[in-house]
Amino acid sequence: MAIPFLQAIGMRYTKMEILLSFSRISMVLKKGYSGSGIQAGNLQKKDFTLTEKKKAYLIIGPEEETPHYAQAGSENLSLPAEFTLPEKPKWSTLFIAAGKKDKVNKIDVVGFLSNKGKLKKDEIGLIEVKDFSSFAAIRKSKMGIVIELVKNEKIKNKKVKIAIAR
Image (cartoon, rainbow, N blue to C red):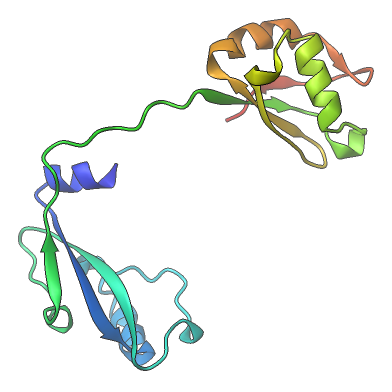
């Protein structure tokens, strides 16, 4: 939600197409030109040829001037007065402290959640099994019930920690 915040504190941003060369970018980054919205990131020489066009967005405060190298060909963009927020996620992630090294696979997790957690197949989402842990997407509306049902259960005859992933 950076754009509403920027608008609230009176910031503006500019979209422009500029001719970049690596030497100019290096110079700008060495000077620490962060006041004009340029961030170092992980730019490398191979990312730019001497005359390659790239798009850059500068976020400029109300008291700041547009840098001299960015004035040619720049276009000011205005922000809409109201923003619509995306809907809240319908899924939450369940952490299971058992993984591949414990001989647990996706099928075991699905079976565990559907049998012990009383979940239907449309209430279980993506499952990822790592070496020592597993993660399963579960409908948010069912998460509390599932945690209560499976907190004292075993997977592959081993009691494991089960919690909402952070």
